[in-house]
Image 1 (cartoon, helix red, strand yellow):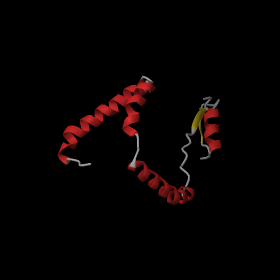
Image 2 (cartoon, rainbow, N blue to C red):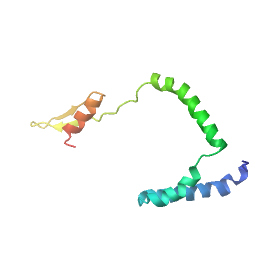
Image 3 (cartoon, rainbow, N blue to C red):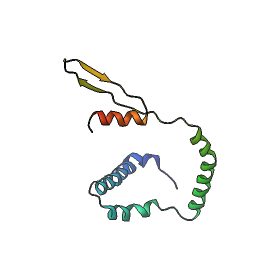
Image 4 (cartoon, helix red, strand yellow):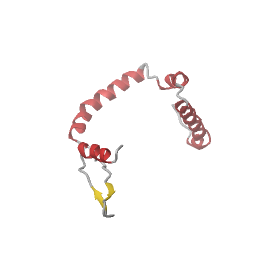
Length: 111
């Protein structure tokens, strides 16, 4: 594969824009058949590329698994709630940054 850097903006960008626009329309209209008929041939990996892909995936699983186990869990964002007391005061209720805190926050908002 050879890439002409001078044609990236003039040919590549508009082509990619048309591709993304098509995918967006198929997604918005829930046209799974039309989208898969178009996209499956573009994303098929076969032949020598399949062998290379399997080697990369195997190497990633061997090295990446330990990284995934050691990584910190993602941060949780819990939205506090406000309520107005009978005497007119506004009270801010803050929750723990845990699954229970997230659920309680939704329960208290009657969501």
